[in-house]
Length: 245
Image 1 (cartoon, one colour):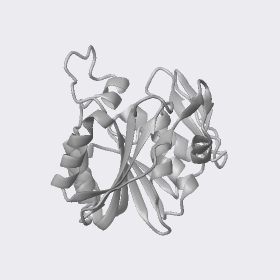
Image 2 (cartoon, helix red, strand yellow):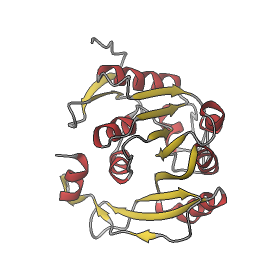
Image 3 (cartoon, one colour):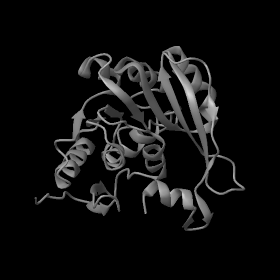
């Protein structure tokens, strides 16, 4: 299938299952956080998963490549970004496995119905201070700052979308960990597993991966941290395993 690229778009090789993804080099391209989340999350055979704020669809594509779920959905509010994700799905002939829906996270439970998914994943905006942004409508600003949705919105809608016992997976920033846990517990999403991510072994963590269960009992397992780089430009063995090399 021939997929037409728009201005500033390129096709990148995901080096997984032969999949490729369309990205806009002037916009917000996926990063290590999305890759790590796709390795941390699990979708069991027959389960349905949704990614809130999917961007270019990277997480549903990587989850489909690594898991045996029955279907994957990506929800994205930005029209042009959602269009890129839809074209990437077509490019990889995954239209029977992945659906990209243009819509607002704040309306997710209304769009899809309550308790309609087994797994929710999300790589939400990290910054809660959007004041002073020169252009809050730019894709990068929307992806990085809580311009169009907040942490509370993500937790609330994620909880509504999950069936009882369903799993919620998030990548975020450690400095907001107390807020994250408070928001999850507010909506009966019980944190069950957590993993810190360090850029180098001697550096402090700059990401945190969290799994929560809707209606789960109170007990969390803090797993061994992930270290991304052995040295500048050289990934650790664990990162290569997550990528699937």
